[in-house]
Length: 95
Image (cartoon, rainbow, N blue to C red; front, side, top):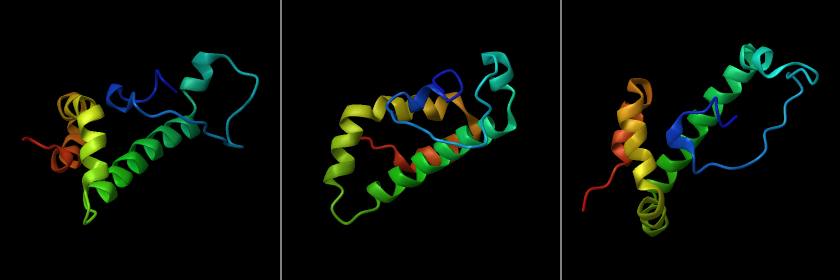
């Protein structure tokens, strides 16, 4: 999924399990799979939703720690994609 997700999601790691993905296909065939595009879009959407929830907590010290470590990735996301920029801009912090 590294090549399919946007560069600003580089801090994400994990495993995605899906019954919809074929097992014995080439990488090129897999990249064209509709199910994989949907999974990638869901990962991006869930990431933004989780960050938004973390940032909107009463005690935002956890988000401040996250932002100090990975804030540059969010800034890359704003410049990289117009579709996610509007969702990422409220998550940016300028001190």
